[in-house]
Amino acid sequence: MPLMPPPTQFALTLIRPKQAWQGVQLFCTTRKGGVGKPPYDTFNLGLGAQEDPVSVHENRRRLRQLLPADPAWLTQVHGVRVVDADDPQLFDSNLGPPAADASVSTTPGRVLAVLTADCLSVVLADQAGTVVGVAHAGWKGLAAGVLEATLQLMQAKRPTASGWQAWVGPGIGAKAFQVGEDVRVAFQGNGAEQAGHFLLDPLEPGKWRADLAGLACWRLARMGVTQIENSDLCTVNDPQRQFFSYRRDRQTGRMATLAWLGSI
Image (cartoon, rainbow, N blue to C red):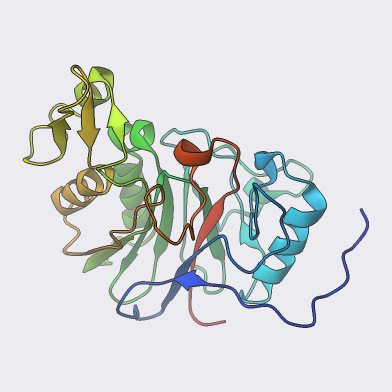
């Protein structure tokens, strides 16, 4: 694969929690600062988005300069499988990324990553910064329990950890997320009954407006996560169009949410 010449300079726009986390680094990329051409302009990190892979690899090379190690990429399938990123056999370069939607680590410098373009990304850690997890949470995975599965593996790896915290990254907002009855039914007993999580669409009978981030925050709180920060950023209706959005554009790139223990 031909290598693109190194840029003389570039600036990435990153989204971070309002407050720094002890012992944990985390951020979400935006669509700014890369080399991609429309509709992948410019910082697309998803190899499955059908963009020229040369551009994606250059964007990943730029991202790598901000990280202590290569990210543990996943093949995301909108499920609930969570993998232990500390297991080197799962990330054998000859086998490709494991099929999963979340990963966890207790190893400093092990970079976890998920890709999104309307689905939520959720980062979890204990307050002491001894274990971290990153999950891709579309409505199917969220309803099926991907966040619960992520925390369970984190607790198994660090049984004495406490003071759980979470950050919910940019995703499709409630005003933009029109869904059918099947989605509401999928959350029955798991947040659908909570006020404001599903509102009937006044313009289209039989349709609902779903608050995906609100559902995630409710489930996190039910799991015992005491500190939850919702970025409250909508990927679809962002006026600056700083996020990729599949629902808005269909053909588009992917942002990445990354987290690791320690510093760069």
